[in-house]
Amino acid sequence: MPAPRILPAAYEDILNIADYRIREVGPNSAEAITNRLLDTIDLLEETPLIGPLHHDPALQSMGYRKLLCGQYVCIYRIVDGIPIVYRVFHESQNYTVDFLWEM
Image 1 (tube, rainbow, N blue to C red):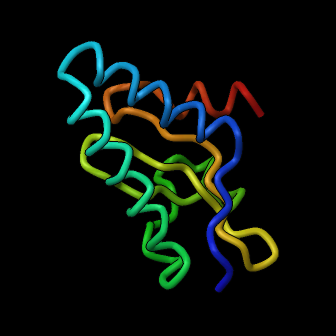
Image 2: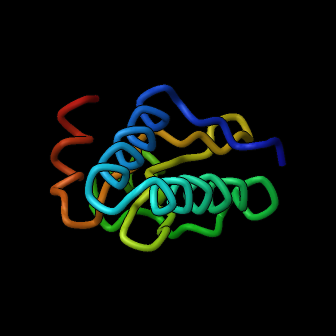
């Protein structure tokens, strides 16, 4: 399978997570979570169905999946054989509503 594609909004999410970690915990934590998120997303190249279909019926009906990475959830789906990461949220966020609102 082709390498996963990370959309600009998802990259921005990852950068915002790193910025938060720098402020709250320190640069080592920011680097660690960034690497962990990117490494987890890279798993989609070999195992694109690793994440289950999303539990929300609206997202599920559109083929969205969720990939868990610690306290973070990567929302993705497979389009024309390519895993595409749309957003990355903290698990405590009401991300389903936010994500549907953006669409």
